Image 1 (cartoon, rainbow, N blue to C red):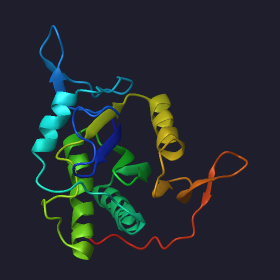
Image 2: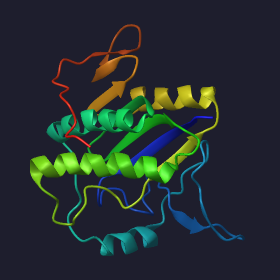
Image 3: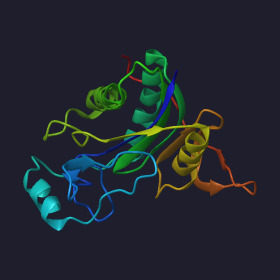
Length: 203
């Protein structure tokens, strides 16, 4: 059976473990062993200043922020990657420091592969245009891979990605196409966006 996934990754150095905005990482879970709170509906861990400072000390370069030009390179590459892998892309949003993707893939496909492919091919596209960053990567090392257990969870996640993101650069839906961030119509939906979509950089 296909499985639905809510995939998230942040850009390098912009959202560290321990961040007060919430994060997904392996943390101590008293009185039990270390745990990773990465199930749909679980609250994110947050506000661990010591962990955040430790992560900051390990950074190999400046934090990376995306702009509209980079988002417009990444967006078609996300779609091309999903099509090439024969995954069903439902929606995605790209912000200055992170992205969200809602995607359905075969039961045999590991979520680590889904996250890794989206990040890897987006990086190749960015590298062709701007070169590899000095720290060697555009993205945080890992990311969040939350399974969506049913259709209700899927639709709630799509709604979150499309309509509840802070200052998105590009938003896309398989029903509505590329959308205008913050330009909400009277019906509560984003209006189509008139930008060049282009193609990805190739797989």
